[in-house]
Length: 251
Ligand SMILES: [Mg+2]
Image (cartoon, rainbow, N blue to C red; front, side):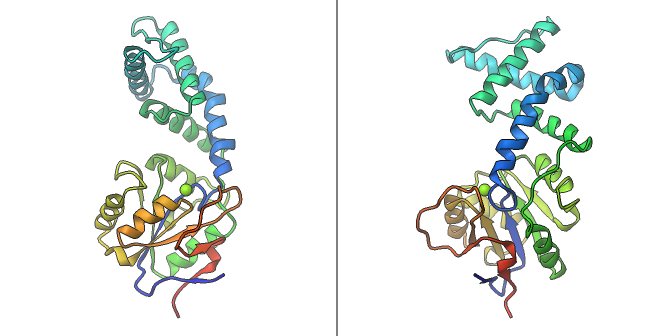
């Protein structure tokens, strides 16, 4: 079914998981890739300053976990590099098992994905209709922005190394949870302020009903993306699309 963009639409704000990209890509490809390469990555890059900065975050988190009495928590030493590396790896594997999203882990995962993309071992999934739609909207002068809970660095990687090629030239900006949580109205207000548009001029595409409600409360146009592999959503008041091709300009 065709959905018409409101005439005043100047920008589209796009969620990634479940909207441009299958949820399966993140869980079936990205997370297992980081996990499989974590040991080798730490071994190869242990002495890199940026990696040690992440390890320092993991160490702080481990100390907090020990203090909080978390089961299996172990401190990571600063002096014995061999032991520190082994305990850091064990800690990170444990965090991945528990699906934790700590800053240190996310930063290291990002570096492993960067490595994978740069070596051509990773290509990001995009649904077939995404690239043509982005090209069309871009040609129509609409600004295209991304808002995802993945870090901005990870978002850029995904669109640079996608199965449809490098789409970053089509994108005007990226937002992550440093702007605010995706289910909170104020985050959408902040994004509109950052891109100097009125909320009525921005259309947000997401598969998540809570995010759609938050954007709608901030007076953006919210459209729900229904893609293969997405969880079922309960009844809702939003227009839905199954392909970006369904979203057309007003006549
Ligand atoms: Mg999503």
